[in-house]
Length: 192
Image (cartoon, rainbow, N blue to C red):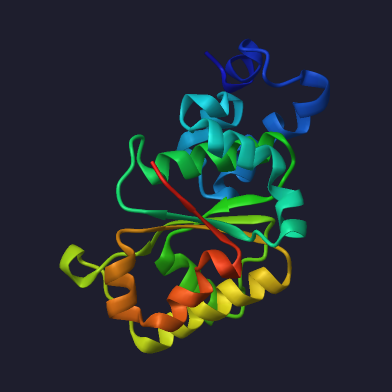
């Protein structure tokens, strides 16, 4: 089945509204970090996400007015965080919001090249992995990520991150980054 046929089959997309999106689906999903998962643009969000996540998606712009600047996922989830983040990006694309999924290495490289991601919502599934799971960051990279979070918050942008564990994050990266990702600073901690 052609992508065009599949996109309209379940009725979630409207040919009159989404014709340009589907015509440019390869370029748009590649830029958004979900090229291999294009079908998530026309898949109902509830297929991969919880009721809380669906509600968050449809109200995320207004949350900035309430001092909420992102979500923090700690630990392992079913479906996995990465799958949920891809689904949320797909939902954003069909609603003409600028969502993007990037891995932490890509974020650091972009920031170091002066191209800090400032799209409407940024999803980073592997924001923190402890050393025991193969993660490791230089102090300068932690500073880059800290700056990213603060600048996006100041600009009213949503940032959604996945961390394997807050205790390990605090131990390895320090309490400063923990404060930035705290509920007091506007991050909603998502519980399974």
